[in-house]
Length: 272
Image (cartoon, rainbow, N blue to C red; front, side, top):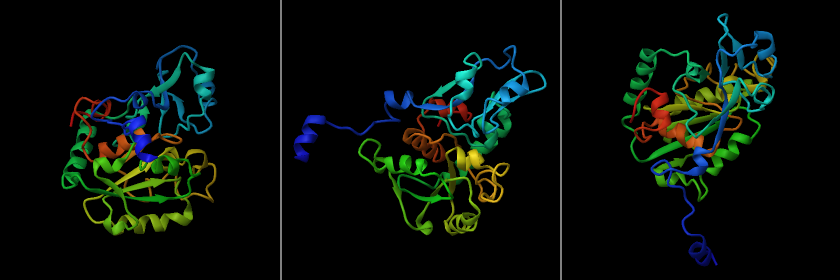
């Protein structure tokens, strides 16, 4: 039966990122700004469109979106399609928290320093990389996307990536959830138990900023606005939840294995 299905359906596993994939390029990312200096964009009107305070207007009238706070609810896009739209593609991750604010706030020098530092640390991580996942109070949506990486469509084993149950065997830490108080210490202990070199990735808007349960909304439930104050984060991946392609892109970005000329390479300051 399985042999007949294989002959009928052919190879289902994506060849991305080596080859283009229409589903990867069509992946919906966080909201983005279409017209940064559009008229009629007051702070009060724009800020009121977002339940997680992701939208701001600078004193000079520039509209900004903090994609690290975007939960993809679509309110801003529906209310002001002249100002906001959806970003597209799998390359949504950034190497710094400031890199998720669009239009960008990072300076080229700062970004280059961060990129060089991460490259130097991950140079020793080659074709066999082990991932440890820690849930710090998520709603479960990010976990489904991480689990999808193991199915025949994405098959991260083809890239030499494997999930491990022990932090002592892990090279990369995937963190989901907003950083619940009860999980702050276990997360720290997991990170400290990992051998060097190691990389930590905040997966999803909850992990990046706290999402809808940030400290300003539920101080008794979360330790911080995301997990960045609990452990050092190297790669920030927004999305509620991010797609499997986006998670895979974040992993390849962390490991300096994205193809030269990719969208992510341009976002992070150079090819790989």
